[in-house]
Image (cartoon, rainbow, N blue to C red; front, side, top):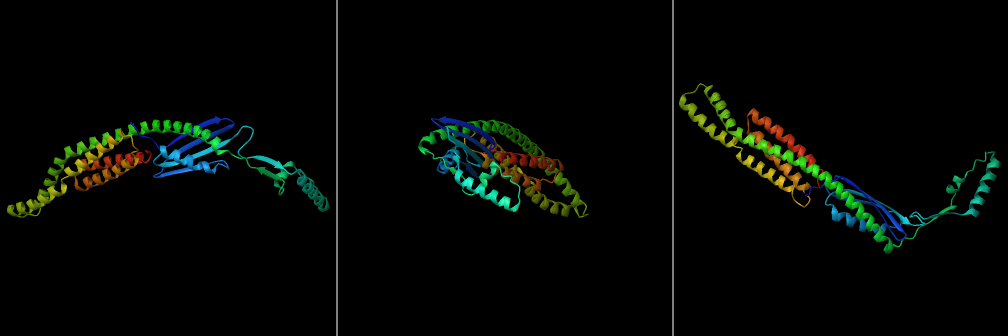
Length: 294
């Protein structure tokens, strides 16, 4: 069984030499594949590597990947440096103006970060050739853990889908068993309407025979029931495949709804109408679950 959910989370961490990397990946439902990557400044070139690796595991869904990383003794954000000479000069000017205006001297160290040109950051220089293996290790860990979560939820989704598909197959059998009764009830109603006209026996037979032929043609649901059986068998077989099946399940759900709507339009018999309503409710639930399956 290979059904996978589109929802999951995975985390990975790795260290290679002086480099370290921490990767978090989460995925949620989406009809198409959408990969979003957040990397530290200076590692933009690594985005294609992350996207290509995610695409190997996903065919659809919204996948968000956040990478934090650095080097022992350094950080990806770089070193913060303060220009002490410039800071002292600007602070003296501020205090001079404050005294002239009669303002309280409430300067604090946090002000230094707001003074133009005082605080400067020296960007950390990455060696992509050395860092790449570290990132790949952390990314693979995160994807493996994400895959385990997706498979675990996929098993639960598959069990639920099998139960619903089996229930619908049972409804199709009941509809097929009720079909002759529906035809007999339709004939009885037709005979009652014709007799109410008060016509001669010959006219009643003639008019009734024509309507019975039309009624038999309009109320025959054998083809629709056969197609319903076929769609249900295909859906069950999908749950055993190795390829992603979510889109195909969604398509089959639409086809199931189309066929059962035709059955409901043809079957003018209350017990069958109730089954049709119950069947449509199950189809909607299957279609909702298919939105969660890759």
